Image (tube, rainbow, N blue to C red):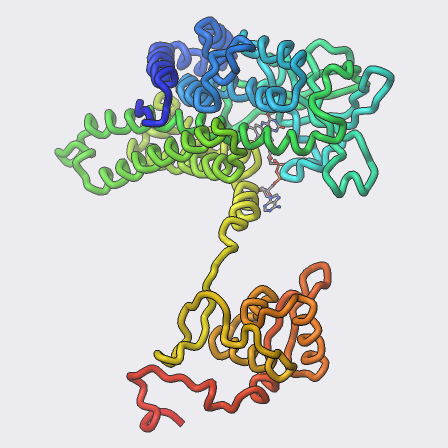
Length: 507
Ligand SMILES: Cc1cc2nc3c(=O)[nH]c(=O)nc-3n(C[C@H](O)[C@H](O)[C@H](O)COP(=O)(O)OP(=O)(O)OC[C@H]3O[C@@H](n4cnc5c(N)ncnc54)[C@H](O)[C@@H]3O)c2cc1C
């Protein structure tokens, strides 16, 4: 396994040890996969060695290896199929949420048990709340020192064997509270609590020996002690919890890639067709090169995201990118591995088809990859808004070029006529674009209100058009054809490249 220069000595030693453990236990994991047996015996073996405590701080009985350690453990244990997923669900069923929002007593109560192998699960998804996770209908009502939970959850991984369930429930119906996403609260519900039932186990395309289930909460009473974070704080806890979920899910997905690539290289060097090893065909080598590239990129983005999370950053974009890339890569590598192994690749004897099936699940869990793109766009694009350049007329070159800083009208008196000229000049340099208020501020130095006032007057005169945002606020403007003509004669806008002979070819 490749380690990274920024890992600590402890993390490197841990990685080597757990890699060997996983390798030695793959044959048994394989048997449990075939017989569709929940791999409790392997979980117990991993717990005995302390591996379920990798991401848990030492003061709560863990190994104190941070998010990086959690990722190393999820990556390596996922080479043993369900064992890795079980660690992932145990961690997403509370580690990050309790560590960052729980009281000291709550951490002592649940993190210590987690380190000792108590299995957990997270319950966000409901029948009517999938990607739209804020729309959960499960309710929690306060009754003295207790909360009464009613509702249902679905698609809960490890539901059944898990002992601890981290549940998001609605605690307010007030539309104003809902608008602020303060309507959810987080609770721990333990297996065996009266009224808490397992309703149905899903037959899935993968997760061969791992249950994924519906849950029913029928007047389930939990003490206020089981509330994690403030009443109404559930949405924020869910969002930061999901960052961690995406991170360790990405690590688990990355863990499955290396073994499949090794299997493919082993296979293609032993398979002979047309008197050649099929690994000698360049087309096959290119496919394997692509697989290696993806596997290395997958690990790099994952462990970079883990590192910055360990540095205290939210890593919302980075963990979303890692989750999306790694699960896309898993399906792509799964498909390529099958293709490289021909008919054998489609049999359950080899792990290629399993990677494809698991990869497909990965593209949907923890927020679908489309939802990751929404997150990456909404949060990521914020970091790209500071484009400091504007296309302005370059007198020397007599063409629009990227320019910095203030425009030629900056600080001068801006009458309606001048504003029209500014918008018309913008047509000359950026013909297809509206001019935003920010652009106009850069050109004129005027305050926003003054710009809007001038735009309103010009629009009334039918010389410009404005663009309003969804709330009805004017945010951009452009000169219309009448305004463009009124501001300057046609000659002003004419522009022909050097090679175009206007005399001969133009008119
Ligand atoms: C195997 C498995 C394990 C799971 N484990 C858990 C678990 O342990 N705990 C838990 O709480 N949940 C779990 N889930 C639920 C999982 O998180 C949801 O399935 C996922 O969030 C998508 O919700 P949905 O299935 O209702 O799809 P929908 O939200 O109905 O989405 C359907 C399609 O519409 C697209 N879509 C939806 N909204 C938008 C939008 N705004 N823009 C663009 N596209 C959109 C989606 O990308 C998708 O392609 C699991 C699911 C599976 C399949």
